[in-house]
Length: 53
Length: 183
Image (tube, rainbow over all chains, first blue to last red; front, side, top):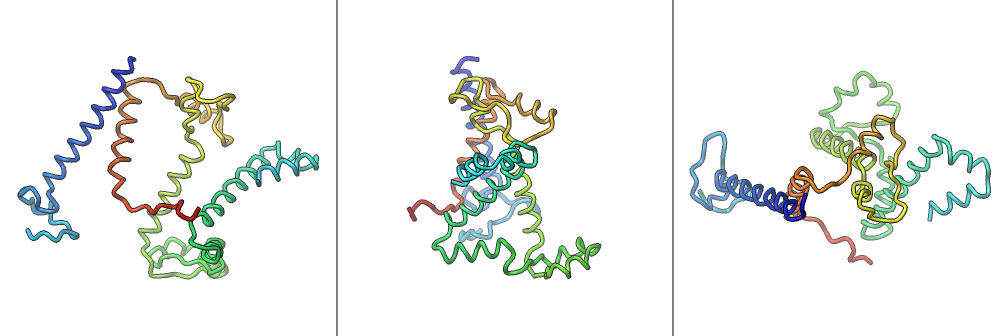
C-alpha cells in the first residue's frame, strides 16, 4: 500500500467522523444554535444550556 | 530502583534467583512492579506528602471498606464474611461502582495483554533487541493471537488510526489537570 493511499484512508476516516459529529450536533441541536426542531422523546435542550428555547 | 534491588537480591541469593526464574517469581515480579507504579502515581499526583499518605491509607483499607447500599443484595450470600471484614454500606452510587469496575477490568486487560507500540511496529524495527512476546505469561493460543497483531500499511489500520485520532481530538474538551507543575 502506498503512503499516499494510507493517508487518504486515514484522512477520509477523520473527515467522515467529523462530518457525522457535525451532522449529529445539528440534528440534536442541544443549545438551540441552529434552529433545528425538537423531536419529542429524542431531543431536548441541554441542561447546561443558558440559551432559552 | 526496585528492579535493581530485586536483581541485586537475586545475584546474592541463589534461592531468590531460582524463584525469580519460576512462574511464581514472574507473577511476583509483575505484581511488585504494578503495585510500585500505582503507589508511585499517588505521590506523583498528590499536592503534598501528607495528602499522598492519606490516599495510600485509604487505598490500603485503613479507613475501612464501604460498598454502595444499592449493591448490598449481591453480597447477601456472604453476609457473614462481609460483617467479619467490617465492610459497611454507604449511600454512594452503585452504578458508579459498577462503571468504575468495568473500566478497570477493560483497561487492565489492555495494559496487561495488548501489545505495546514497540510490539505493534516490530516488523519495522522501531528499536534494538525488542522482545517479541507480550509482557505477561499467557496461554499459547493468546500469545499466538497477540503475536499476529502488528501494524501494516493497510486500509484497516488507516481507519483504526483515524478513529483513534478522532476520539482523541474530541476528548480534548475534558478537564485534565497539568501534572508536571510540581516538578
